Image (cartoon, rainbow, N blue to C red; front, side, top):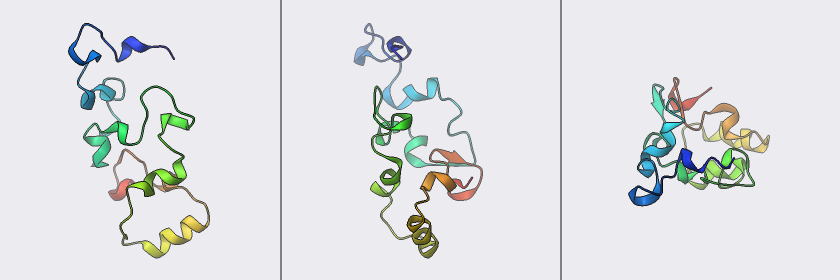
Length: 109
C-alpha cells in the first residue's frame, strides 16, 4: 500500500516507529483483547506467521493457510481423532479457530 511511514521512521534507531514486538499493535490494537490469546500473537511475534511487506498469500501470511498452523503445532492434541477427520475433509484450522485470540478456550469461533 506504500504506507511506509506507518511503520518506518528513518530518524529513529532501528528505523521503526516502535519496537518490533509493539509495532503491529499500533494499528491492530484489539487483535488479542480476548480471554484467551495465542502466544505468538500476544507477545508481538507477528512475523512468526506474517510477512511485513508483501506475500503471495492472503493476510501477508508466510505460507498457505493449510500448512501454517501445523508448521508449529506438531504435538498430539486431546481431540486428535476429530482433527484427523477435519483434515481429511480439507477444513482449515482457521475455519474453527481464530489464529490470534478468542473468548472461548482454544480460540474457538
